Amino acid sequence: MSADPTQVLAFETDCHIFDGCGFPAPGLHSFLFEPLAGNADGNGFYFNKPMLLALLGSVIIVGFFWAAFARPKVVPGKLQMIAESGYDFIRRGVVYETLGKREGEKYVPLIVTLFFFIWMMNLWSIIPVAQFPVTSIIAYPAGLAAIVYILWVSLTFKRHGFVGFFKNVTGYDKSLGAVLPLAMLIEFFSNLIVRPFTHAVRLFANMFAGHTLLLLFTIASWYLLNGIGIAYAGVSFVMTIIMTAFELFIQAVQAYVFVLLTCTYIQGALAEHH
Image (cartoon, rainbow, N blue to C red; front, side, top):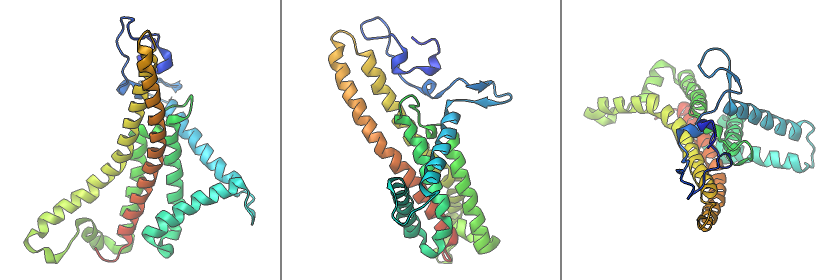
């Protein structure tokens, strides 16, 4: 076994079936990383692998769009065409469809940035050497959800004022009659507490579960590679390939869902009547 149980990967263990050792199952320890710089005790500077991947991902996204649009051409090259297609997909397929062109145009840069940043953070899961989705650490989805939450609250206040904000978040509707106080209480907690929580957890939980499954089948492929277990190792390896392909799809879907919900929240903040 690896000397460091917090860094167990399939290729880091000599443990195989029939060797008298247990299966090194993935768990919470698979999401813990020793610091690359600083101390793990929480005092002073601290920098680990997920932070490095988040930084590299940001540089890659900025570099990609900078290279694509630094010298735009009327007849775009391959790089510019790919960048324009991605940008236009989010602008028209998400922002315009949800907010309309007039209201939505000013939010296109934010939504495009969120989508490609989240997608890149998810993609690290299937990239060799990296092999870890940054968004499976709850702090990252929570930080992104907090940005959206602050934007939603500030837009609602700006558009409707204090009274309008209160009506917006409580779903105030006189036609509800006697159940209005209960409905307002439920809507209040749903919008101000549950909404940002579910926005973050939806992304985190999917990436956490997906990475755990990939680890499970990858480690199992190595663990079963002994004696008669080789036949089962082949099946596990095939499942690893299938899960990788499925995870590639889920990574894009989760980035899309996050920005779609973001646009929905913005739309709710800008709407005149609720």
